[in-house]
Amino acid sequence: MSGPQFEPVRTVRAYERVVEQIEGAIESGALCPGGRLPSERELMVQFSVSRSTVREALRVLQARGLVRSRPGDPNGAEVLPFTPAALHKSMTTLARVAELSLGELVQFRMVLDAAAILLAARLRTEEQLEEMAAAVERMKEAAAVERMKEADSAAFSAADVAFHDALARASGNTLIQVCTDVVRSVVVDLIAGRIAAAPDQEALMRRSIAHHEEVLAAVRAGDGPLAARLFRRSVYDYYAGYVPEEERTALQALLE
Amino acid sequence: MSGPQFEPVRTVRAYERVVEQIEGAIESGALCPGGRLPSERELMVQFSVSRSTVREALRVLQARGLVRSRPGDPNGAEVLPFTPAALHKSMTTLARVAELSLGELVQFRMVLDAAAILLAARLRTEEQLEEMAAAVERMKEAAAVERMKEADSAAFSAADVAFHDALARASGNTLIQVCTDVVRSVVVDLIAGRIAAAPDQEALMRRSIAHHEEVLAAVRAGDGPLAARLFRRSVYDYYAGYVPEEERTALQALLE
DNA sequence: GGTAATTTGTTCGTATGTATG
DNA sequence: CCATACATACGAACAAATTAC
Image 1 (cartoon, chains in turn orange, yellow, red, blue):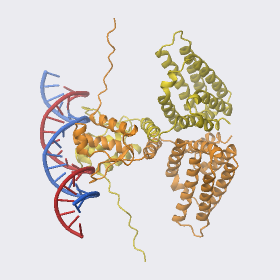
Image 2 (image 1 turned 90 degrees about the horizontal axis):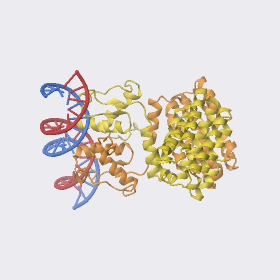
Image 3 (image 1 turned 135 degrees about the vertical axis):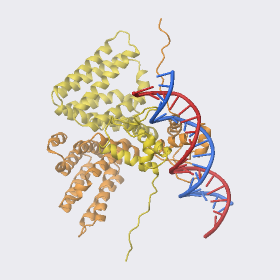
Image 4 (image 1 turned 180 degrees about the vertical axis):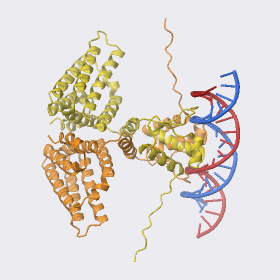
């Protein structure tokens, strides 16, 4: 006869229990963004742990982007609205320690943004189309400056981001929106320097604007597959030069 | 004449500096997985901060999945190899606090896995094909059991996961591999209960096996677009019943 | 505007359980 | 078994920051 099936006990740290409870309260909605946690001293009473333990728990919650605490705040730590910051951090870490290649990242971007475009071509509203058109206009203005400065270059990039953000929102999928944003910024972080060092900034911008207009037109026309194809092609053209040759074939596989 | 452009100073906590330095050492490769950090007492000397500060920093690093510390370990905290645990955690949190719908998650899965399939159809090796075929065989064995038990159901799921994991690896893109894994498990976590409560487990499994065989055949034949189409269709058929009607149109947009 | 009260950031000391040799 | 070094956890204390009166 077999006895009761005992299971190995996982020793769980005190601070983890605190994290679990607070995290649960936030995820269940008992604590809403903008709401406040009790003060550290109050928490140490409620959980009956020391302040150090409470603080370690708060640091973890802060690292996960769930709360923020400021010195001297009489109201205790603030519950934050969701931000993709934690997701961004983990993906950046992934890119670094798992040594993600630029090729893999660009490939991922081609996939995600193309999906967003495919969906946006069906679901976009008129306002979103106008938003994208306005972003393209801002790109043009920034590129039209006679003697390009850093500020203009930044304005161009900001308009570019705004375009893709509107596009991602038009997809109607929050996850796609967040992930496209994260991946785009990770890619940009990786090669911002090399792009800035490119000799013919103006030509790059003009090409980029033309591509954006093509994609926008296809989205407006409701032709998702065409828009996605155009986008993938333009991303490939833009980044292929920075991707080592042996990785380029994998990128080309997405061009059909 | 405008003076020097001063910028607002962001007060940075002591423990953050510690985190930055250790994180940098890991990301730069100065600290390798399996390697050890100095002991907490040694760290407080090197950073000239107190023990509590060191511990708060270690908690953050632990929450990010970079290190692990055990009581009594004479070697200090261990540097961990990369795991997608942190990414998984942030995406789960995203799903909960941003209230991601099942529809959005399924849509994301259709996009990512389809991309993996598209790439795998070009880049897969013979061994990977065999691996997938073996996984399908295990699915068949698990489904062939007369009186289904939990263990068989678990074996079926495990084989299913193994199939998709091999597929994702065959894509040659680490990021796609990790993200498909994360999204799949998040989706499963969300509706495992409802799937298990479905009346006709056997029929579901048979259909699933048939779909997997179709996809595998198309991948083997190198027809990525076909394989991707078949996959999206099967995912849609499998999950559509659990997705509210108003979200289904968005899913259908991916079926072409 | 200034002052007091409260809170967080940080330090230090200590006790306890645990893993290694 | 013992000694050592370690992480875990507690508690008291001070400094710096914020709010409220």
